[in-house]
Image: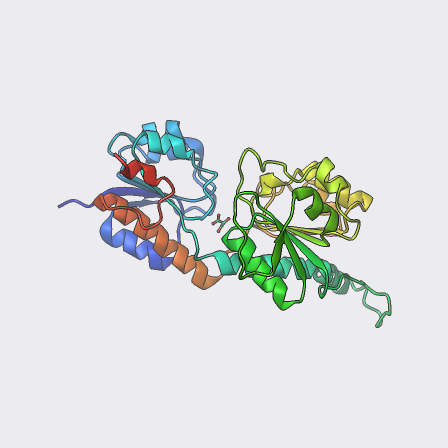
Length: 325
Ligand code: DGY
């Protein structure tokens, strides 16, 4: 019997890829850069399954280009703003993602960014490499304290809560804004409105998905409500922060610093004025990039793909309504 045909849009970790290769006839995109839209439209033609990344847009045009035999879309990410899910649902195609397994790695990294920005680690490193380190200085590169500081978490889902647990270990006060999530009595965290969060937080960490309501949630108006010592950390999606407003807030000292794992657009353009700022840390969307986590993501993406190809329910399905009929 012939194997189902799938397009895998990048080399994913071997653990998951080998499972896909065992079960499927794989067309694997091996470049470091994502396939262009034209290539995507071409390569999905006639496939039974698509394993894609957050850099690949999946919408009605792409699903129709694939054809009516397409059985499953598996996203190698927990976030799925690259996929127009209703377009897949309308065609009866289940879509999988990778929730849960990257929670700790992402929260660890968000906390690392928070501490790196608060204690000016990257500035210090640049200072040394630039040959500026002449002696121990009583006022050299002074930063923030964490004990007793207030951490404001925007989005209190799995990763936001994991961030709260880490902050408790540093004796921080934790407040959060998430109108959709009920309080978690196990966590020492207080639900507040966004105004209060902005006004009281020494650190603001973003953990909300990208939705029409969260697009440019951090903008000139919201930055104006933050404390001048505040530090912004973004490990969610770049589009939640207006980059121009962030530049102005950092440049004018309206807020003290920011640390971004994600930017709008990605990658950040090399001529972005943000890159001129000393009080900004930017890294290339690596919050979930621990070896074990990426292995698990590849396995979950493979499991979703293979389940869909077998006509079984996806282990982690974004649009379970496709099973309701
Ligand atoms: C995701 O999974 O959505 C992250 O942004 C990358 O791991």
